[in-house]
Amino acid sequence: MLTIENLSLTVKRRDDERQILREVSLTCGPGEFVALVGESGSGKSMTLRTVVGLTPRGSRLTGSVRFGDVDLVTASKAQVAEVRKKRAAMIFQDPRAHINPYQTIGGFMCEGLRVNRGLGRDEARRTAARLLDEVGLFDPESQLKKHPHELSGGMLQRVMIASALASEPELLLADEPTTALDVTTQAEIIAILQELRTSRGLAIVLVTHDLDLAAGSCDRISVMRYGEIVEEAEARELWRNPQHAYTRALLAAMPARLEKLPAQSGHPTEEKP
Image (cartoon, rainbow, N blue to C red; front, side, top):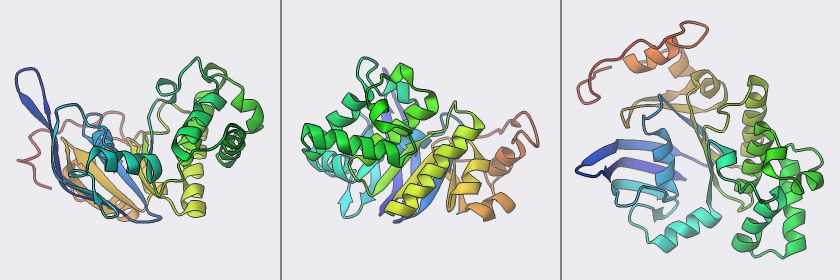
């Protein structure tokens, strides 16, 4: 379904350019749950953003990002918009930054349903309530009347997942959907994604810092550092037998083992597993 091959991204700065992604390759088939893990600034979120055309203005892309029969690197703006509108959806890290605080939850969800799917007002509201129920929000009719500040972080993340499902996508891109949530709520959000994967046949790419979470919920894990993937393996195999020094350092830095990540020297073009 999604095939990223040798993707490189260079962005313009005031006086020069900076390469953000280096020869990134990643695949996610129908019904697969794939994780991208690594430190902040390693390029995980930007990799997802290239799929839905959310790259910085003036940036330069090489390689390919194929979604079905469309190469999103060379596709027109209209083709990319069509994929984002109907086939691929993204859940962002901070739900409060993506919902208008003056708008009700119902207004936020119904706007997308009416614009993207052409639903009438009443049908859009019924669909919004059904989607909220599907992601585990109790009394969805009541939740539609509330404003974002009346909901907890976990409840708002459920709203974001429901909003992403409104377009009935084939691919779900989840950019750290459990950040800043307590452990119990994190588990609930991942359980919702797993259920959606099963019930809807969704392909899911998850960005996370949590190797433990990725190993327990995903089929495969790709480890990123300095804008490139340094290791990729089946989740259980990577957990048991990491090959790259950086992956071993990430595993060693888990709270149960160590409180501080050991410094990793060198540049990615110079490192060897």
